[in-house]
Length: 277
Image 1 (tube, rainbow, N blue to C red):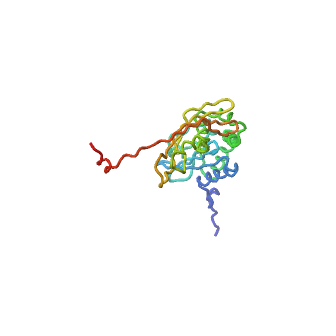
Image 2: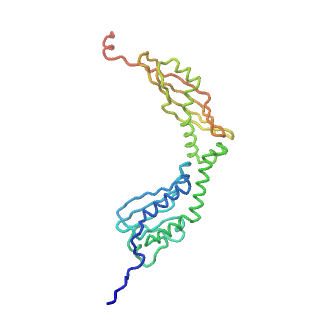
Image 3: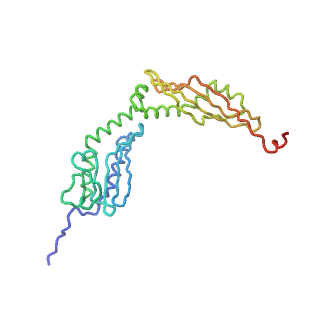
């Protein structure tokens, strides 16, 4: 008696990879490839009619995120998968929904993968596209320049206003403790019986970006811990300072002011009752 050969296609196999596995591998590969200069990030969101994955490249040094692709599939089936990326957008109109007619219609979209092998090929097409490669190279170059800028003032001038304010604020946050080391601040707190001083908050009020240096004018407040065995004579200081950032990114604080704030304690009810009316 002759046997009947298997009629199942070779595409049906025991080691099919899910879209999540394929995309997660590429996110990890980007991080390893660039030694963390770029980080691949994969996120997932669920709706009633679709599950969507987003693959981003993130540059931590410049805090910039770029969307590489999105992948969608039905909430009940992992395949087919529809990709969306720059490389596909000039060739088709993006679908408005996960309508079954779109997925199973006669005309197969260029960005649809019906198997893991097809998905791998499409993801490779996206990752090797000029759009993605040029963006990755730009982000790496910008990140490297940020880490070792040849001229910090030129670097600041190349940023957007929001990015510039963030970069200057980061410099102030890293160095504002130097205000406490100044002679002006030391003279101010000499009249107090507090120790362990630290800057509580600061506010950059004005930024003047010149050709050779950047000047940030700021106000600040600081506080210390009152020594229990001594009389209270103030534990808060407010003042202003001028932070001067040079072309090497070094910060120097000038024109520092410091004033001790004396908070008068209100008399308790017993003391108040002893007062004559």
